[in-house]
Length: 322
Image (cartoon, rainbow, N blue to C red; front, side, top):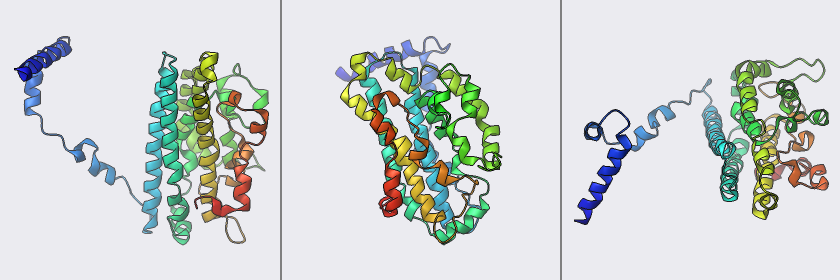
Protein backbone atom coordinates (compact mmCIF):
# COMPACT_ATOMS: atom_id res chain seq x y z
CA UNK A 1 0.00 0.00 0.00
CA UNK A 2 2.85 2.32 0.84
CA UNK A 3 4.43 1.78 -2.60
CA UNK A 4 1.12 2.51 -4.35
CA UNK A 5 0.75 5.80 -2.48
CA UNK A 6 4.31 6.74 -3.33
CA UNK A 7 3.78 5.99 -7.03
CA UNK A 8 0.51 7.93 -7.02
CA UNK A 9 2.29 10.91 -5.47
CA UNK A 10 5.02 10.72 -8.09
CA UNK A 11 2.47 10.60 -10.93
CA UNK A 12 0.74 13.69 -9.56
CA UNK A 13 4.08 15.51 -9.41
CA UNK A 14 4.84 14.51 -13.00
CA UNK A 15 1.42 15.74 -14.15
CA UNK A 16 2.16 19.06 -12.47
CA UNK A 17 5.57 19.27 -14.14
CA UNK A 18 4.30 18.63 -17.68
CA UNK A 19 0.92 20.38 -17.59
CA UNK A 20 2.31 23.59 -19.17
CA UNK A 21 4.13 21.80 -22.00
CA UNK A 22 1.10 21.34 -24.25
CA UNK A 23 1.24 17.56 -23.85
CA UNK A 24 -0.38 15.37 -21.25
CA UNK A 25 1.61 13.06 -19.00
CA UNK A 26 0.49 10.01 -20.98
CA UNK A 27 2.43 11.21 -24.03
CA UNK A 28 5.62 11.51 -22.01
CA UNK A 29 5.08 8.08 -20.49
CA UNK A 30 4.73 6.66 -24.02
CA UNK A 31 8.09 8.26 -24.86
CA UNK A 32 9.61 6.68 -21.77
CA UNK A 33 8.19 3.30 -22.80
CA UNK A 34 9.79 3.47 -26.24
CA UNK A 35 13.08 4.96 -25.09
CA UNK A 36 16.16 2.75 -25.17
CA UNK A 37 18.07 1.96 -21.98
CA UNK A 38 20.92 4.39 -21.41
CA UNK A 39 24.46 2.99 -21.49
CA UNK A 40 27.66 4.41 -20.07
CA UNK A 41 29.33 4.65 -23.49
CA UNK A 42 26.39 6.49 -25.03
CA UNK A 43 26.04 8.87 -22.09
CA UNK A 44 29.63 10.12 -22.26
CA UNK A 45 29.93 9.63 -26.05
CA UNK A 46 32.88 7.35 -25.47
CA UNK A 47 33.48 6.36 -29.10
CA UNK A 48 33.50 10.01 -30.17
CA UNK A 49 35.77 10.98 -27.28
CA UNK A 50 38.32 8.31 -28.13
CA UNK A 51 38.31 9.31 -31.80
CA UNK A 52 39.40 12.89 -31.12
CA UNK A 53 43.12 12.14 -30.94
CA UNK A 54 44.49 12.66 -34.46
CA UNK A 55 48.30 12.86 -34.50
CA UNK A 56 50.06 14.80 -37.25
CA UNK A 57 53.10 12.49 -37.24
CA UNK A 58 53.94 8.81 -36.67
CA UNK A 59 55.74 9.42 -33.34
CA UNK A 60 53.89 7.48 -30.57
CA UNK A 61 54.40 10.16 -27.90
CA UNK A 62 52.49 12.74 -29.90
CA UNK A 63 49.29 10.99 -28.84
CA UNK A 64 50.24 11.56 -25.19
CA UNK A 65 50.81 15.23 -26.00
CA UNK A 66 47.37 15.56 -27.62
CA UNK A 67 45.48 13.71 -24.88
CA UNK A 68 47.08 15.62 -22.04
CA UNK A 69 46.15 18.95 -23.62
CA UNK A 70 42.60 17.74 -24.20
CA UNK A 71 42.37 16.66 -20.55
CA UNK A 72 43.68 20.09 -19.53
CA UNK A 73 40.98 21.84 -21.55
CA UNK A 74 38.31 19.69 -19.89
CA UNK A 75 39.59 20.76 -16.48
CA UNK A 76 39.53 24.38 -17.66
CA UNK A 77 35.90 23.85 -18.61
CA UNK A 78 35.19 22.56 -15.10
CA UNK A 79 36.84 25.66 -13.63
CA UNK A 80 34.75 27.92 -15.88
CA UNK A 81 31.65 25.96 -14.88
CA UNK A 82 32.22 26.93 -11.24
CA UNK A 83 33.26 30.49 -12.05
CA UNK A 84 30.11 31.20 -14.03
CA UNK A 85 27.97 30.08 -11.10
CA UNK A 86 29.88 32.40 -8.79
CA UNK A 87 29.58 35.36 -11.15
CA UNK A 88 25.84 34.78 -11.62
CA UNK A 89 25.11 34.21 -7.92
CA UNK A 90 23.04 36.91 -6.22
CA UNK A 91 22.81 35.34 -2.77
CA UNK A 92 26.16 36.56 -1.40
CA UNK A 93 26.25 33.44 0.74
CA UNK A 94 29.70 32.79 2.17
CA UNK A 95 29.29 29.01 2.15
CA UNK A 96 28.38 29.02 -1.55
CA UNK A 97 31.32 31.27 -2.41
CA UNK A 98 33.76 29.16 -0.43
CA UNK A 99 32.51 25.87 -1.89
CA UNK A 100 32.99 27.10 -5.46
CA UNK A 101 36.53 28.37 -4.77
CA UNK A 102 37.43 25.05 -3.15
CA UNK A 103 36.13 23.15 -6.15
CA UNK A 104 38.20 25.32 -8.49
CA UNK A 105 41.26 24.66 -6.36
CA UNK A 106 40.63 20.92 -6.52
CA UNK A 107 40.63 21.10 -10.32
CA UNK A 108 43.87 23.07 -10.32
CA UNK A 109 45.42 20.61 -7.87
CA UNK A 110 44.61 17.75 -10.23
CA UNK A 111 46.05 19.67 -13.19
CA UNK A 112 49.26 20.66 -11.41
CA UNK A 113 49.89 17.24 -9.91
CA UNK A 114 49.38 15.60 -13.32
CA UNK A 115 51.81 17.84 -15.17
CA UNK A 116 54.59 15.31 -14.64
CA UNK A 117 53.07 13.62 -17.70
CA UNK A 118 54.26 16.59 -19.74
CA UNK A 119 57.59 17.02 -17.95
CA UNK A 120 58.75 13.42 -17.73
CA UNK A 121 56.19 11.40 -19.66
CA UNK A 122 57.49 11.86 -23.20
CA UNK A 123 60.76 11.23 -24.99
CA UNK A 124 62.52 14.53 -25.64
CA UNK A 125 63.86 13.35 -28.99
CA UNK A 126 60.36 12.49 -30.21
CA UNK A 127 58.95 15.79 -28.98
CA UNK A 128 61.60 17.87 -30.75
CA UNK A 129 60.67 16.15 -34.01
CA UNK A 130 56.88 16.01 -33.95
CA UNK A 131 56.63 19.56 -32.60
CA UNK A 132 57.76 20.80 -36.00
CA UNK A 133 54.53 19.44 -37.51
CA UNK A 134 52.50 21.54 -35.06
CA UNK A 135 53.71 25.01 -36.08
CA UNK A 136 52.45 27.61 -35.30
CA UNK A 137 49.96 26.05 -32.85
CA UNK A 138 50.78 26.64 -29.18
CA UNK A 139 49.28 26.09 -25.74
CA UNK A 140 49.48 29.89 -25.60
CA UNK A 141 46.29 29.77 -27.71
CA UNK A 142 44.15 28.27 -24.94
CA UNK A 143 41.15 30.59 -24.98
CA UNK A 144 39.59 28.91 -21.96
CA UNK A 145 42.54 29.86 -19.77
CA UNK A 146 42.16 33.49 -20.87
CA UNK A 147 38.46 33.26 -19.99
CA UNK A 148 39.35 31.94 -16.54
CA UNK A 149 41.52 35.01 -15.99
CA UNK A 150 38.80 37.40 -17.17
CA UNK A 151 36.20 35.77 -14.91
CA UNK A 152 38.61 35.92 -11.97
CA UNK A 153 39.60 39.58 -11.80
CA UNK A 154 39.02 42.98 -13.44
CA UNK A 155 40.92 43.55 -16.67
CA UNK A 156 43.13 46.26 -15.17
CA UNK A 157 44.72 43.56 -12.98
CA UNK A 158 45.69 41.63 -16.13
CA UNK A 159 47.48 44.49 -17.85
CA UNK A 160 51.20 43.91 -18.33
CA UNK A 161 53.09 44.86 -15.17
CA UNK A 162 55.03 47.60 -16.99
CA UNK A 163 51.75 49.48 -17.58
CA UNK A 164 49.49 48.16 -14.83
CA UNK A 165 49.61 51.33 -12.74
CA UNK A 166 48.51 53.47 -15.68
CA UNK A 167 44.99 52.08 -15.90
CA UNK A 168 41.89 51.76 -13.75
CA UNK A 169 38.40 50.28 -13.88
CA UNK A 170 37.33 53.39 -15.80
CA UNK A 171 39.65 52.62 -18.71
CA UNK A 172 38.10 51.42 -21.96
CA UNK A 173 38.01 47.60 -22.06
CA UNK A 174 39.50 47.45 -25.56
CA UNK A 175 42.50 49.47 -24.39
CA UNK A 176 42.97 47.21 -21.36
CA UNK A 177 42.73 44.14 -23.57
CA UNK A 178 45.30 45.54 -26.00
CA UNK A 179 47.76 45.85 -23.10
CA UNK A 180 46.98 42.53 -21.42
CA UNK A 181 50.10 40.82 -20.09
CA UNK A 182 50.13 37.67 -22.22
CA UNK A 183 50.31 39.51 -25.55
CA UNK A 184 53.94 40.39 -24.88
CA UNK A 185 54.63 36.68 -24.66
CA UNK A 186 53.98 36.32 -28.39
CA UNK A 187 55.46 39.59 -29.62
CA UNK A 188 58.96 40.08 -30.99
CA UNK A 189 60.69 42.20 -28.35
CA UNK A 190 62.94 43.95 -30.92
CA UNK A 191 60.48 44.70 -33.73
CA UNK A 192 57.19 44.73 -31.82
CA UNK A 193 55.75 42.42 -34.49
CA UNK A 194 53.09 39.97 -33.34
CA UNK A 195 53.74 36.29 -34.04
CA UNK A 196 51.39 34.37 -36.31
CA UNK A 197 50.33 32.45 -33.18
CA UNK A 198 49.07 35.67 -31.59
CA UNK A 199 47.51 36.98 -34.80
CA UNK A 200 45.55 33.74 -35.24
CA UNK A 201 44.40 33.81 -31.63
CA UNK A 202 43.29 37.44 -31.75
CA UNK A 203 41.36 36.92 -34.97
CA UNK A 204 39.57 33.88 -33.56
CA UNK A 205 38.88 34.93 -29.98
CA UNK A 206 39.21 38.70 -29.42
CA UNK A 207 35.48 39.46 -29.97
CA UNK A 208 34.50 36.66 -27.58
CA UNK A 209 36.97 37.68 -24.87
CA UNK A 210 35.92 41.33 -25.06
CA UNK A 211 32.27 40.27 -24.85
CA UNK A 212 32.95 38.19 -21.73
CA UNK A 213 34.90 41.09 -20.19
CA UNK A 214 31.87 43.33 -20.73
CA UNK A 215 29.52 40.76 -19.25
CA UNK A 216 31.55 40.35 -16.05
CA UNK A 217 32.62 43.97 -15.59
CA UNK A 218 32.07 44.77 -11.91
CA UNK A 219 31.01 41.15 -11.26
CA UNK A 220 34.23 39.14 -11.55
CA UNK A 221 35.07 36.79 -8.70
CA UNK A 222 37.23 39.52 -7.16
CA UNK A 223 34.35 42.00 -7.43
CA UNK A 224 32.07 39.42 -5.82
CA UNK A 225 34.54 39.06 -2.96
CA UNK A 226 34.74 42.84 -2.47
CA UNK A 227 30.94 43.06 -2.36
CA UNK A 228 30.75 40.64 0.57
CA UNK A 229 30.29 42.11 4.02
CA UNK A 230 33.49 43.12 5.81
CA UNK A 231 33.00 40.25 8.23
CA UNK A 232 32.69 37.77 5.36
CA UNK A 233 35.73 39.22 3.60
CA UNK A 234 37.82 38.53 6.71
CA UNK A 235 36.76 34.89 6.92
CA UNK A 236 39.98 32.93 7.36
CA UNK A 237 38.87 29.94 5.32
CA UNK A 238 37.83 32.14 2.41
CA UNK A 239 41.11 34.10 2.48
CA UNK A 240 43.02 30.82 2.55
CA UNK A 241 41.04 29.44 -0.41
CA UNK A 242 41.44 32.62 -2.47
CA UNK A 243 45.18 32.72 -1.84
CA UNK A 244 45.43 29.07 -2.85
CA UNK A 245 43.57 29.85 -6.08
CA UNK A 246 45.90 32.76 -6.86
CA UNK A 247 48.96 30.62 -6.23
CA UNK A 248 47.56 27.72 -8.24
CA UNK A 249 46.61 29.82 -11.28
CA UNK A 250 49.39 32.38 -11.28
CA UNK A 251 52.41 30.65 -9.73
CA UNK A 252 52.18 26.86 -9.66
CA UNK A 253 50.58 26.42 -13.08
CA UNK A 254 53.13 28.66 -14.89
CA UNK A 255 55.95 26.98 -12.95
CA UNK A 256 54.84 23.61 -14.26
CA UNK A 257 55.11 25.01 -17.78
CA UNK A 258 58.54 26.39 -16.95
CA UNK A 259 59.63 22.93 -15.90
CA UNK A 260 58.32 21.46 -19.15
CA UNK A 261 59.91 24.19 -21.27
CA UNK A 262 63.29 23.67 -19.61
CA UNK A 263 62.98 19.91 -20.02
CA UNK A 264 62.28 20.00 -23.74
CA UNK A 265 63.45 23.41 -25.00
CA UNK A 266 66.11 24.69 -22.61
CA UNK A 267 68.85 22.09 -22.76
CA UNK A 268 72.13 21.93 -24.65
CA UNK A 269 74.07 25.00 -25.75
CA UNK A 270 71.23 26.73 -27.62
CA UNK A 271 67.71 27.30 -26.35
CA UNK A 272 64.96 26.17 -28.72
CA UNK A 273 61.99 28.35 -29.60
CA UNK A 274 58.48 27.28 -28.59
CA UNK A 275 56.22 26.08 -31.40
CA UNK A 276 54.28 29.34 -31.51
CA UNK A 277 57.38 31.49 -31.34
CA UNK A 278 56.46 32.62 -27.82
CA UNK A 279 59.32 34.04 -25.77
CA UNK A 280 58.63 31.62 -22.93
CA UNK A 281 61.58 32.72 -20.77
CA UNK A 282 60.02 36.18 -20.48
CA UNK A 283 56.38 35.10 -20.59
CA UNK A 284 56.13 32.17 -18.15
CA UNK A 285 57.99 33.24 -14.97
CA UNK A 286 55.37 34.32 -12.38
CA UNK A 287 57.83 36.76 -10.78
CA UNK A 288 58.08 38.62 -14.11
CA UNK A 289 54.33 38.93 -14.68
CA UNK A 290 53.07 39.32 -11.09
CA UNK A 291 49.53 38.53 -12.14
CA UNK A 292 47.43 38.55 -8.97
CA UNK A 293 43.67 37.99 -9.08
CA UNK A 294 42.85 39.22 -5.57
CA UNK A 295 45.44 41.90 -4.65
CA UNK A 296 43.60 43.29 -1.62
CA UNK A 297 44.08 40.12 0.43
CA UNK A 298 47.90 40.36 0.37
CA UNK A 299 50.46 42.41 2.25
CA UNK A 300 52.99 44.53 0.34
CA UNK A 301 55.67 42.01 1.30
CA UNK A 302 53.67 39.12 -0.20
CA UNK A 303 53.15 41.05 -3.43
CA UNK A 304 56.83 42.03 -3.67
CA UNK A 305 57.88 38.39 -3.24
CA UNK A 306 55.27 37.09 -5.66
CA UNK A 307 56.56 34.16 -7.71
CA UNK A 308 59.74 33.71 -5.74
CA UNK A 309 59.34 29.95 -6.33
CA UNK A 310 60.61 30.58 -9.85
CA UNK A 311 64.00 31.57 -8.46
CA UNK A 312 64.13 28.34 -6.45
CA UNK A 313 63.24 26.44 -9.60
CA UNK A 314 66.02 28.06 -11.60
CA UNK A 315 68.60 27.06 -8.99
CA UNK A 316 67.16 23.58 -8.60
CA UNK A 317 65.16 22.61 -11.74
CA UNK A 318 64.69 19.07 -10.40
CA UNK A 319 62.17 20.41 -7.88
CA UNK A 320 59.61 20.94 -10.62
CA UNK A 321 57.80 17.74 -11.48
CA UNK A 322 59.93 15.64 -9.15
